[in-house]
Length: 381
Image 1 (cartoon, rainbow, N blue to C red):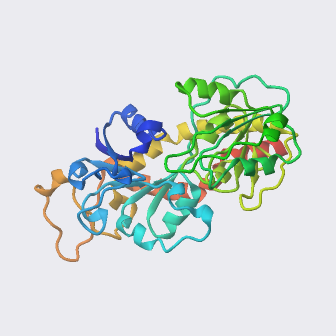
Image 2: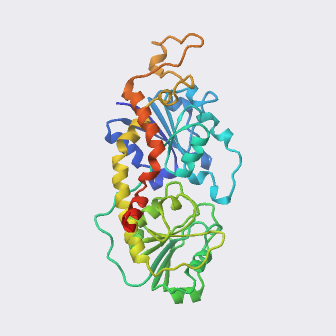
Image 3: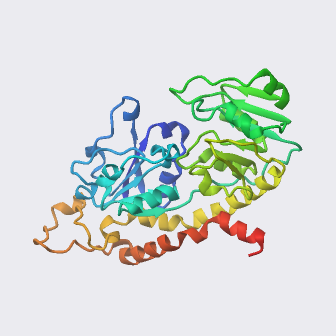
């Protein structure tokens, strides 16, 4: 059994959107200690001294400063989990990120976005890419006649109602609910006009005492408009796809890593939104659900490899390219290698075999996208 430190952005403490990973590790018999980083809102960061004695240190989006330039010099098993939305790729070309990735050279990165997986690999860092899908409800909500929309207006400067209004164009919705609850620090939203309210039978809300009440409102829709221009994983739109709803989203990650426009949802260009065709939303929602069912099965089948990747020491995946730190329990019992000697090899967890399988997985991962499998089935290929 491994003792694992799990350091996470404290915002996720409320949303619980990242709780699935500690739950998986505990289900496999490992001990997971949670550490919440409040530095983003002026609180104290998690100290390296608090986590360094654990067998594995997982850092989800937030991370604590290492006591040496690279994490590999301080600990033999560091796993960093970045989120796509922390890089702001939707804004266009980013600044030079080499300094950001430097501390992780020789360590491991777990990616839930193909875009960040490619970025990580491009900087020479071992990356394990896996596409997350949530458990699917036993059966979708019954189909409703007509068009029924839902939009959570979270970020007025980035994705206001007027953008959604342009996507709707001349189409009239039979009902439309707008949840006017912006993210902290975001300007107050602009309400829809009286004309829009009358035309689309718009209802609004600002707060729900119970999440179940919000869920009930969302479940009445058959068209779900994604609330952000970019997502880390994208729990909200994945839930909508699992409900059998047609998701309408900007053509940015991670939405465009799950949605194939015209097959299982609709994508649009955020800088130039144009009216969309909503005539097949029932079919698109049904195919979205089918894809999520297939995706969840693939996620569960990949669970053992995910856990194995987390437990595998970094040195086993770098083929002798770096010297890695010993574990704390080994420091007193091990002798430092002679000058020029190659890094230690480890036999635990069948590391050599796993490293080979991991390399094969990385080279073939793209052909297993559940959406592509579904597309081939629908096209008879």
